Length: 304
Image 1: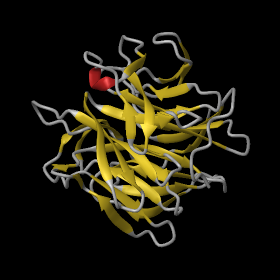
Image 2 (image 1 turned 135 degrees about the horizontal axis):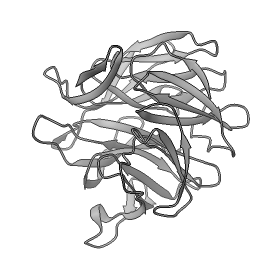
Image 3 (image 1 turned 90 degrees about the vertical axis):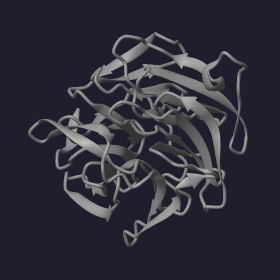
Image 4 (image 1 turned 30 degrees about the horizontal axis):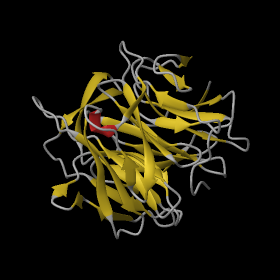
């Protein structure tokens, strides 16, 4: 493992760029940042609220899931963990950052009569749209049910596709674009749905939760954050306080454990000329790290 930089506050949402830089959101600092190969960090844009997941869009702009803001709990000096919805909560949204000038545009903040609560992670589908999770918000004694949405990149359409999940967080598309995977944090489960069309999935009948197929459920203290795919179709899950990336090949429990030295392994992505460099955000002792991967990761739509 190589530490790329330790000059971050609470990083997530890495995007590996072809020029060797990595773009990340720094949630606690309310910013989108660029990490240079030498470890220096540049601020691309200030994003008020809680910039969470990020993805490069078809127009080479960065689409951001903004959770609207949360409290931060300092567990040790310089080490944070996310808390409940904060007093200054701005509402959830999908924001777009222009990499050329750092301007921020709000694309969506509601779906019909329902306001977005806590958008968390995002993946482009390569067909002019994207999928994103809304984890909802936690308050002192209650929490929202979460949802998965599909939306058009041009701001013309948004629809709620899956509702009733418990803390949906990371999501990913299979290499052929035909399967959607979604991780739940608090339950430690990963679900899958077959994609039926533009912003549509095939759902199983009740009692399948939210109509999904259970893909992985390792049990124990597993709590999942971000997901990434390998070219061969394996699902790689950042497993937060298990201090690891768990690599699943289809079994609900059997997985390869890639240990990492941090209590909050949050997000990962693949990059490098051969797609065999895994970039990981470690958010307890805040760092962006890189490690060689044993097979190529899946190159994301619109990657540059």
